Length: 177
Image 1 (spheres, rainbow, N blue to C red):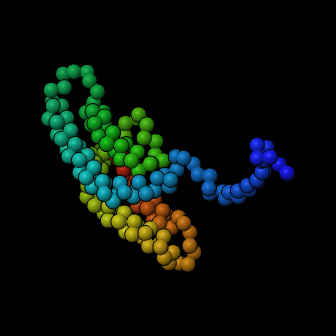
Image 2: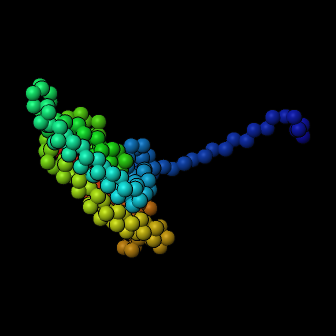
Image 3: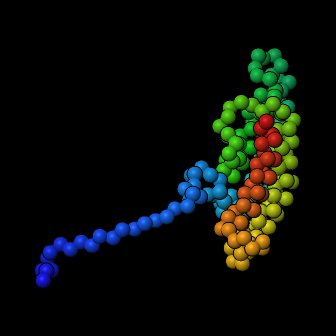
């Protein structure tokens, strides 16, 4: 008989089987799908309206004061516009965990397209917001009822949210190329 003060140890072995998709990349946008969906469905129209207002004001003031800079040896007008209008697009891309390199310092080549993307962003954001709501409702019902095609997968709703994110990302990247 053992005394209560004796050290008794039990040895347990635990075996865990991991699937290949359990080891996800921490920078993978799929890991942040719910936050991306919340941003796309709630905050995107407000933020894109604010950046459009900023783009209109900055473009107006740069064009207004550009005749004053004719006698100086400063950078061209396109460089000034790119310097003011590129950061909001890069911030949009960082909020949706884009794989596009947002730290690239090269100015975009098409300044008219950059201005157009910034100014039309609220209009496109309304459609993206509605698509995000549809994706969110699909994600909710797919989680409860399962996938309509019968192949239940835990990533069905996440794939829908990432599809909406890709649409917005393609729109933003147009202004940076």
